[in-house]
Image (cartoon, rainbow, N blue to C red; front, side, top):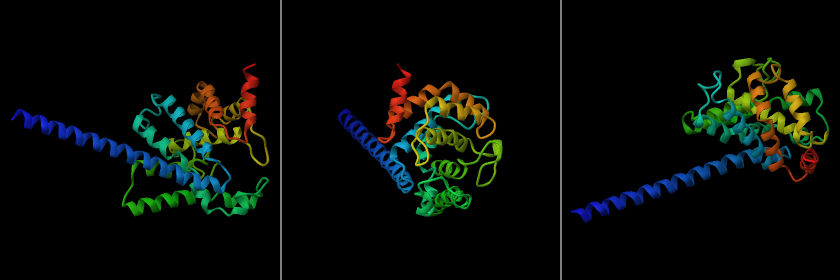
Length: 252
């Protein structure tokens, strides 16, 4: 009888181990698919997967910095932060609906072209809504992906797009993404500008406190700004050597 019990126990442990392995494999596959979808959108905009990795890490860092703040404690916990981080690469998936002539224009956009570009949050939301429809319901991951895709271009003072939402009307996930995306754009090379230094990018974010960005998130950004700089350097694009050069200069 004891031998039978031991055999059953070993069998159960083996099954648990196999289930755990399969679960981890599914999580890895899910992460890979999410990143692949984000990369497809970014490649059309001549971005790289490193942009996606950087913005993921910025969102994670900033969310963890405010998770115990009274304004955010209800909405941010370890699970929600993990799903927000996983969904961050889909923030610009709506760019698949923007014409190449606008995405690849080697200069600043005209007002008419920018009006077209401003449709990408709506396109992104619609893509994710269609995925939800196909799956037969909302998931936590898709909820955050939709919030971020639709709301990351909104501004705290209501001057953003596509809705002109303001303040607390903008989901926390989108407010986090707004800082992550702007900081990364400032630190990255564009056809119309070189990469900005960390100090310049930091000052622009701080100047946007209460206008572009949630004031409390900017305060948290200031506290963990050094880590933002480290992430930018660690995952710098190959054509952004200036970032590493500026980091080296700052250390001498």
